Image (cartoon, rainbow, N blue to C red):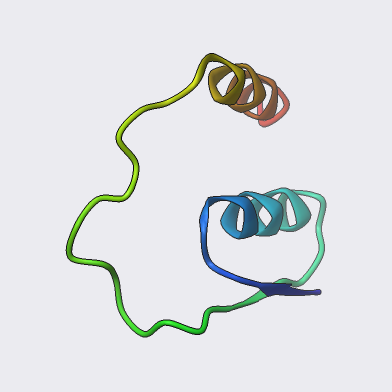
Length: 58
């Protein structure tokens, strides 16, 4: 599988596909990592989704 974009959604998708046994390649346009954080908060819905994903990993 090819995942276009190494942002939060792309990486979460890649992680889920990998956990399901798929071979995954992530392609990102930008090189390296950012120097500043772009995330200032975690919304309640994001925490719910992360909880579901983490519960499925055990």
